[in-house]
Length: 150
Image (cartoon, rainbow, N blue to C red; front, top):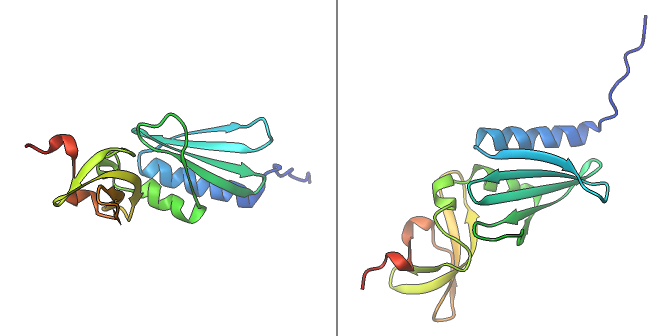
């Protein structure tokens, strides 16, 4: 009887990558994986104008960097516990606004600072209003400033 040789794969890493890729596929994200020069592995997830790059070192997910719509480079980091929220976020609402976009919320104007999916159906914007305050309205309560008729 010959002994079967097991592949040299860390089950923790392969399981985590498998979970991420499965969720990403189910939610319409395109997936690519590539080794980086520093010995890490990058898993790149892309959907519409969003891109998330998850970096693995051995069996550990080091970081997940977000490239927001309209940006040429990643500009935010999220923890692995928040990754599912972004993967499953409402596609239409996530693509409706951009960072630094001028918006109207009720009778207040402001600028989008961040876009955060709450769950599969709601997406929250972090908006700095012209009066200096900051709020977190849902995208369903926000209009782009260009859409407002004067």
